[in-house]
Length: 120
Image: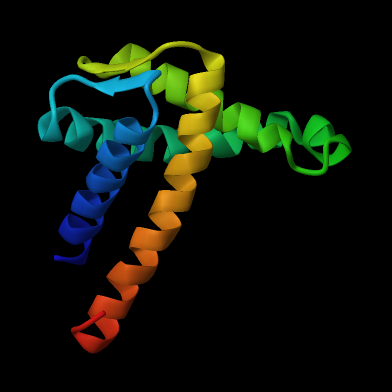
C-alpha cells in the first residue's frame, strides 16, 4: 500500500512540476505521469548510481553540482522513452529536475506526516 501511495505522490509531483514549467509537457495526463514515474524510478535505480560513480572526479571538483547535470540528462532520457512527456531542451530538463526534487520533498513530508499521524 505504501508503494502505491508513493507512486501516486510521485506522479502528482510530476504533474505539478510540469504545470509550473512551460517548457515541459505531460501530454497524456495522469497516465503519462504514472508511466513517467515508473521510468524515472527505474532510471534512477539503475543508471544514476553508475553515472555518479563514473563522474565522481567531476562531481567532487564541482562540489556536487554536476549531479544536477546528471539528473537533467536522465530527465531527457526519460522524455525520449515515455510517450506524451516532452522537454523543450536541456535547461528545461535541468529546471524540471530541480523543481521536481523540491516538490517531492514537500509532498514526501506531507506523505510521512499522514502515515505517522493519520493527519497532516
